[in-house]
Image (cartoon, rainbow, N blue to C red; front, top):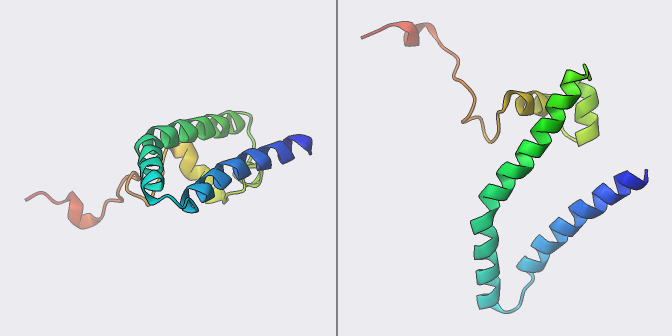
Length: 106
């Protein structure tokens, strides 16, 4: 229970920091701060996704169900499956399903 509150507090701190950026009154300072965050965000996002995926892979190796992992992470079971497979985003990383027309050669 205490650890869950600590997790919630860490997430709240990150979200508060984002809200603080939005609420800055000095527009130039705000724009500079946002530029810095956006510049660093892709690398940070990849690191966070890798950490989360490693957790999912460990839990799956322990034969924990998708539903249980989903409940632990606060996401859907489908999202856990996507994380396990290394998929992210809007579907652009997922392999395309082949149709009969795609199998034909010109």
